[in-house]
Image (cartoon, rainbow, N blue to C red; front, side):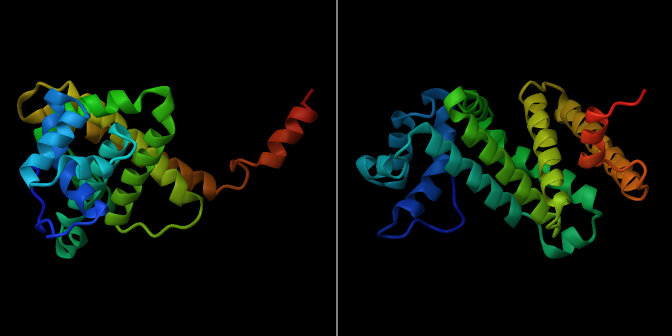
Length: 225
């Protein structure tokens, strides 16, 4: 994100409004200052917000800053595509476009993202990491028009969270021209997902191959001879 919000900061902003406007600017400084009070103070200065008030918007420190930044990326990604654009693409192309758009949004703060992921990898932050990963995957599937409410709702998001996370890690180390290696990596992973979905459909149509918890437990209890 470029640190500028489409809507100006209100005259007397709420903490939520401050958080939304501050987050991308904090990210812009986090590459040098880390996800720290120093980054918050710099962002607050740019928005002419009292630094003490700005810090109140992030009571959990770095975790809240990263959470707010990722939420901003979710929102900016969703706003980047028109209904007409999405309607012209098959679902897997919508997902591909969403992942690439997120990379585009994060590109100016690439090192800040690297630092953010290092913080999220800390044991105490693993629940937050899982929450943010799921939220981003859900935002992408919703953008793609997914309305599943059964088991597929969860499996699709779990799979996409893995694809997106691994693609981001590949991108952070990508020095190829035009980030060609990242794009090729993403396309391979999406191809794997498509193969998996085909396999799932085949199993769903064949009762003999469909996984059954009862049958599985029965085989454990009464193994074949």
